[in-house]
Image (cartoon, rainbow, N blue to C red; front, side, top):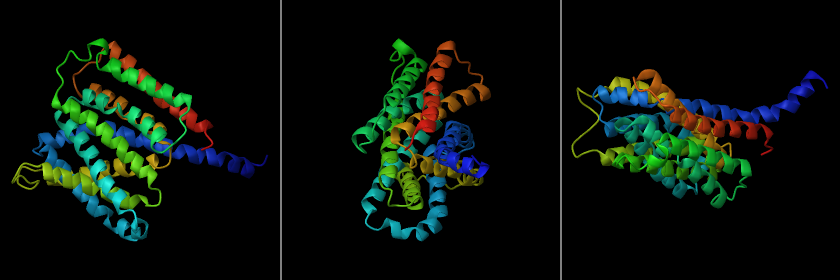
Length: 299
């Protein structure tokens, strides 16, 4: 076989792997997002004000691309409205819980989402669910259960941030299903709906009279975070999610949890016990299982 023919033979498999690696990279950005979020909060940015400003900026940035793709929006306004609602709720609840809660606990509760992703892909989008996908879900949830304390999972009083973290996972899974299910609409309008919904919801939840302006609000740093870190994380992850089955993307996204745990150990004085490493290994195994499956998939 010639070198050119060999390249053409390998190309489809390589193209199938691109969304996997993009999603892994953006998952690292999401997992470490607590670093800039907590830093900005310590500089004087209220959580909801920070979210409202950052996503409002992204909505403005997306406008030129939305205008070019306006033809794809016709007849799909109800789906874009659903992205505004579910996507906005996912981003606001996730960011708020990360800013004010314990990073590892919030991320673990958020990562009950493989269940919602696989079930949604199976029963809503009617995607075939192979046995290895269910094995990945079982591994991921077992790892999350261990990290939360195993049989003593309920020993710690449940905080309202725990419910927000769980809700963010449900909203995130629903938003992903809509993103993937409406293939007729190009990515920019869907991203704009996501950004707009996040900013509007955060504005609505702000206490009366409170804005994201003022001498104490680090506007410059928030703009820098929004136009770099947040933009890459959103655009890359949502593009990759539309390129693969919901169950696969839901499990690969657990790399966020691994990153959150690793960065918290690296940048804080918190030490992790053996059971945390065991749970993390199971979650990492679920992600690696998805990568191997992607290499063998013909879809």
